[in-house]
Amino acid sequence: MVVPYRHEPFTDFSVEENQIAYQKALNYVKGQLGKEYPLIINGEKIFTKDKTVSENPSSRNEVIGYVSKCSEELAEKAMQAAFESFKTWKKWDPAARANILLRASAIIRRRKHEFSAWLSYEAGKPWKEADADTAEAIDFLEYYARQMLRLKDGIEINSRDGENNRFSYIPLGVGVTISPWNFAFAIMAGTTVAPIVAGNTVLLKPASTTPVVSYKFMEVLLEAGLPKGVVNYIPGSSSEMGDYVVDHPTTRFINFTGSKEVGLHIAEKAAKVQEGQIWMKRMVSEMGGKNTIIVDNEADLELAAESIVYSAFGFSGQKCSACSRAVIHQDVYDEVLANVVAKTKELTVGPTYKDNSKFMGPVNDKAAFDKVMDYVEIGKGEGKLMTGGTGDDSEGYFVQPTVFADVDPKARITQEEIFGPVVAFIKAKDFDELIDIANNTEYGLTGAVISNNRDHLEQARDDYHVGNLYFNRGCTAAIVGYHPFGGFNMSGTDSKAGGPDYLLHFLQPKTVSDMF
Ligand code: NAP
Ligand code: MG
Image (cartoon, rainbow, N blue to C red; front, top):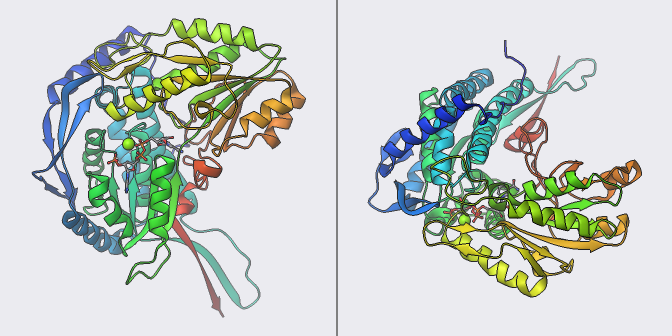
């Protein structure tokens, strides 16, 4: 009997016992820093000379680990291993495959703070954000395991007299999972286990700035009993072997989450049929966002300010769902702006691996720091700087939470994804204009409406064109199984991770009609 799905609760860090437990996990991880990590291909640990150095973004000289880099030759070996293991893995009872996910989830739950502590070190996550990332990884395992049980016998279709018709789902083959650093655990794990529970085998290429936490996850999968070769861990440089695995004629699907630029590049490559390739590659591509919270004139203005601040600055704005545009009705614009600025000034920024005192940690790396600071400079020419606007990368990559006011809806900082703690305020004259501005980007990932006007909420339900729309709350913090996640337009293929249709991306339905 499988217990019904419920999402993993978050840790209450106001409880002293939990603080002590987390600190203990941080101390444990500290003792593990600086190790060397291998690739895992067909269950074999392979150390390469060439290594990626994973650093602590809060303290740039501290090395989290030295992670072997996969070459083209080793990627080929991984491809062959995945191809071979597909032959047996696809025949496993789906319930037995689901059981591996549930076993992995149980292992992670027992070591929950340890995983979160890795995220505090490797991804610079404040405790609360790290805890949510780990909880989401657990949720993906638990949810997709149950979804597979739902799909395993197919779906009932009609049969006429003298005919027995069946409609069932079979896996696709070997896929490549390419994951981002911002949910270094949850998205990496979710985009890996969904294809495998469906019977596929995978090459996992994690983001280069967060490879250690993904190695720790690989260890869990193997401990849970995953047969060798089902997931092959191939971290490394995207320029060296990214294109190789994407182009490979054996690749059947690509499960990508990351930026629009890289997603489109991969989609274009994947569309080209290579010599010997006998299928069209399936592409799931979840990409960026430029998400807006709109505030109506009839609204809880305190809730509006809280929602904007948390959605814009949680994890330093480095969520694909982060709010980077606040579009406010002219009647309440000044009040909401003043309140957001006041709340933003109270936020603390600093290292996340020492204690739980800071609301915001660093941005991801030097490249992220430079990109965000460039946009801050652009913003100074496009709006009125209300607070923040500075950064310091002398020790870690810290950027102060930044608010720009009176920005044009077509300005660069209101159109381009910054992926940092920067929010732009835009004024609108009425509700129609609030919606028009919210919809005026090429993206369509998340959005929120703060309003007490039911007519307006119903209008937004139809007209606000985003994959994840929230009423009277912030636009981040989607929960697996409760808020299936994915965006429209240039935000990607709207695969709805953590939703009831997600596994279908990695399955193909087959109809068998039997006469009697
Ligand atoms: P990214 O730079 O696009 O990288 C994503 C992944 O693609 C990384 O593993 C990266 O590897 C790999 N990659 C880069 N170039 C490649 C190539 N030519 N071939 C194969 N793989 C390649 O994105 P990121 O900076 O990690 O993550 C932030 C972005 O992800 C933001 O745009 C955010 O909005 C988006 N995101 C979207 C969602 C969603 O659900 N819609 C969720 C989370 C994040 P390297 O690290 O080695 O370069
Ligand atoms: Mg990157």
